[in-house]
Image (cartoon, rainbow, N blue to C red; front, side, top):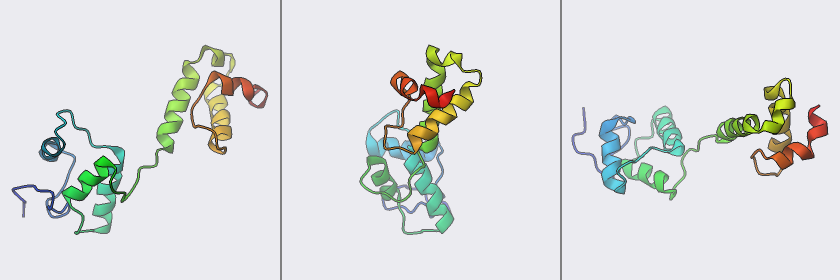
Length: 134
């Protein structure tokens, strides 16, 4: 059965939620943001709702996830941090001295990942741990 009218009370499972145009249009109307984009926590949440069969979870709840008012499932952002770290590492002229830049980036990332430091690449970080990377 296809739910014709989408409201904030409509269940995700009930309406067969997808990240397609019909639902994007619904969220555009709800947020007033013409260039609305589903965020990674919304994606993680929708996946978990479907996996667990949570019929109580609604489009309104997903809107709350978008606004950061609720948490249901969160996306593991460490992969995004790693990707940005490698990108920034390789973009730095100072890293061209490494024969295997990806290996050097991974070694530096491990130091940063296992510390309380900000999970971002910087030239200062490279200089500080230069001896550990050779």
